Image 1 (cartoon, rainbow, N blue to C red):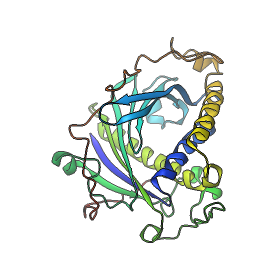
Image 2: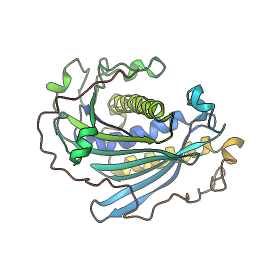
Image 3: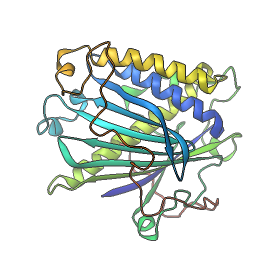
Image 4: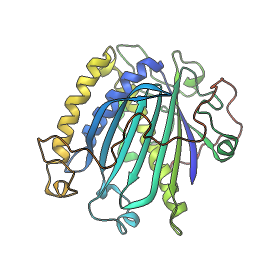
Length: 308
């Protein structure tokens, strides 16, 4: 098991980011859903939890066979998908990724959002054992290297300036002086308990996750003029429209239609997945999931691993 806590600061408030995140996810999913691969939205509905209150549950199937490295493609079926289940009790979210072909593979992401620059030592309430395992990794949306194939000049935060908010460009050291500022604290746990492959797969998953987080948060800011001023109703309508378009794209190919008996045909309503939850309690919980979140100096053991 490999556990890292990613901290991604944004030149936004937590409330602003709530809209920007939903917009970014919907638009990004649509852009990635081409030629039968991408993100298929199976469920998107309200949920309740005794501890966290009212929230939103989503279930998605991520079709990505051709995007895997060759050494993974060699041991998986030609067509397969990863299931994403997410419980959004903003500003606290829980996301789980599983793959039916690899039952011992799981990614669990627990997130909290706070209006600070990443200085809360333990806002996710980790136990002493978890703190000993955790590696803290600060992701900088302005200065961190991004894979060449994912670079877009229009999303370069060192060059972008928002017309609506007058924020940006972001220079080196921006996190120390920018106002407003918020931080996404993401505890990512990857488990793949298969002898001979565990270390390699878990390390690969974390590299991929880091790149996804970097790109997604860059886009949330670079697209701010597209979503700034939207209400929650506005962004939910946008989300619903793009989800319908995305599903039509992903489900429009014969290979996708034959994935499973529960996969919907184009234009139809998707059947509930066998992994669908029974809210409010059906999501993974760690031994300790609450923390004081008192701002303090970040641990001196924080590391910035090479994203390559």
